[in-house]
Structures are given as structure tokens and as C-alpha cells.
Length: 423
Image (cartoon, rainbow, N blue to C red; front, side, top):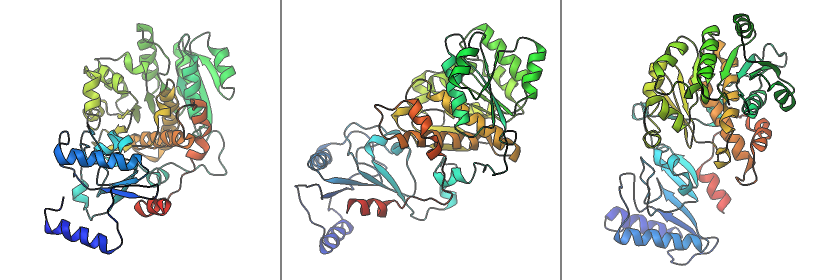
């Protein structure tokens, strides 16, 4: 749109520097979308709609598409779109927008350009977790370590017919560096768990106060919930363990579902300890008495009040994953692929989060930061796998050694790196 002097001058400058205007494309063509900005709402119309359609045709013919700030037609806040440009690269000014993360398929690679925003401008915004941030927070494992210094985690899970959930949580813990793994599972599951994860020490669910005392004395953190099932017996088990164990805890899956509509009781059990709950949107909706669609629609805000009332970090799984801290801070992990959209993925994350809670809590680290680190590495392992079809959780677990190889000063070169690969 050349209605302003500034736009006309920019066009003349581009042409003078060798940029060519063309309505045809080849595999070496570059198309820049700068039609709509962050304030646009609703479906494109008229000339704008036609221009978006033309960009789509150029891309189909082989052109690479770079969008400035966000793809035209994308709502910067909600991610809603009806007709939208599909980008190979989106150059975002100042920060990543919520819409980018909620509609990642439209954005391609995302590079953020510093435009001099101050800390005051960013105050109150969620923090987007990246590799350098995680590397600065995950504790190193010294060469002199032994299994005790690498800490002990108890995974309580695996009801009848659900031993696999406890096994996957245990695998997530072992792949994250736990020193000693204990799995507490339903009677009758011991043989299956032993076969699935030989490194674990396996016991059945505690039946006496003495059993609970032994469990509490042997661990540095507890992760409870994967595959427990939902029944009055489940709630009784969760309450008994959380009353006997007052240290760091991750509460997931069915251990959350048994408190549906009764978050006050859960708050009373968790308060005063480092703790993380890890619901997906439906589980968070049950806790809050909302519809799942309401949680999804307010993904970046839905867990903050619950985090405050529980005194626990709330890790809301999904794309993106949002972690809410009781102190009001929010962290966002955009790492991951749809390979994680499969049964058992959350169990792996629970084991990873439990490991970091066990290893980080003594250092006074905010549990929300530990949860954010686990979510990032979990997603990164899926990205390393590449494809979605053909990838299982076994592949994600096998990618963990590479995912945990964190570079403390790594920063993506952004636009220049992308343009170099394009050329």
C-alpha cells in the first residue's frame, strides 16, 4: 500500500538496491509480507484478501515468504485466523506475540528483532523460555557425584492395567539424571514395572503407617498421579502420601482429577512445600469448574489464580506450555511438536519435573522455574526427533541426551542465519 510518502520512499530505496518486483516466482524468489500489523482484527477483505491470496500463489510456485511482525490475517493476541499468510520466516519486532505461539504453523521460523523496548515495557509479560535460560538454571552434575547426590525420586502411579504410566514417568526421571528411582505401584504391577524399568526399586502402594514412614524417609521428591485411576481409594492414597511426605512434590493426572471442584483441599495438602501440578486443559478445567474451551481460550492467564491459591506452580500442558508461579510470574515454553500429542507424554514430563524438583529445591530455586526447564527439554527432545508420524515416546526418550546438552550462551542468530540459509 503506497498511500504514504514513507511507503513510497521505502519502495524506491528497495528497487535502487536491487530488489525486483515480480508476480512470478521460482525456488530462489523471496516474498515479503508487510500488509497488516499487530492491531488488525477480523477476516481480511477486499484488496488485502486478494494480496494474501497472491502471496499464497507465489509460495506454491516456490517463493520463500518472510512476514514482518506477524503473518497478515493472524490475530496477534488470540492466534485466530480465517485467511492468513503462511510464512517461512516471521520477523517479530520487540517480542514474540501470543498469536505466534498459538498459531505456530502459520509463522515458520520466528526471529525477534530488538527495537529498544525497556524493562518497563516488558513488565508483567510472560517470559519465553529459551536454551540459555534453561542452561543457567539446571544444576550441573559434578564428576564426583554418586546416586545419593543425584537425589532420589519416588513415582507413585500405575493402577490396575496402567503400569505403563508409572514406567514412562520413571523413564523420564532416569533420562533427566535422577540418581535413584523408586516406583510405588498397585499390587500386582510389580513384575511388569520391574521388567519395564529394571533400574527402579519397586514397591506396592503403602498399606500401613510404617510403609508411609519408610517412603518419606527414602526420597528427596515425590511425583504422584500417572495412571492411578480415579476412585475414593485413589484420593485416600494421595491424601495419605501427601500428609506423610512434606517435601517437594509433583501432582499429575489422576492425583489431580480426584480433587475436581475441590482445589481448596488440594491447597491444604500442598501448602508450605515446593510443589508443581501438571494439568492438561481438561484437568485444569475440572479443578476450576470450567469448560475446557474456556481454559484453552485463556491459556496465558487460566492458571495464575490457582497457582496463588495452591501456593504451587501450575504447569498447563499444551502448545505452548504455560507455567504459572504463585508469585505471579509466568513462563512459556514453545518447544515441542505434535509428536508429544500422544498418551504417556505427560507421564514422561512428570518424571522430568520431579527430578528437577529433587535436585533444585535445596538451592532455593522457584519450582516454576524447574517446571519450565523440564517442559522446554521435553519439547526439545521431540523437535530433535524431527517427524511426527513414525515417532513414539521411545524415540523422544532416546533423544533426551541430546536435548539435555544445553549451551549456556546459545542465542539464535535469527534473521541473518535464516537469510544465509536461504542464499
